[in-house]
Image (cartoon, rainbow, N blue to C red; front, side, top):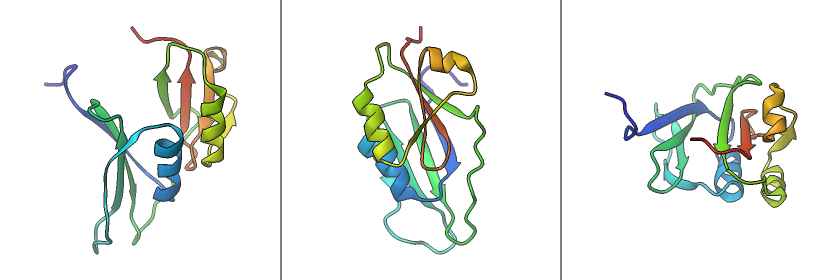
Length: 132
């Protein structure tokens, strides 16, 4: 049964795991929870990032034998509810780490936050509201 204690993994392909790590770990502040350390024939390269002790994480994958080109849409969002104004220094770090500040497809997110595309084109929304 799925409930509030269920751990959730969101998996998606990445063109460049090092670039994804710079964006999500060095700039956003998530932790590397696990990564492959050597190439294993027939297996994907993996980078798992998330908050230490959290109930969710991203699994970013790259198949070196048959790489996939990520195909995010403008509504593929990862929303972080900050409950505070967005720190422009954080946005600058995300941009320096390969992100790109973009207008949101849904104007709600521009009204209540900032949208930044990650190096693979997926969108991170830093929302000023809280989730309750």
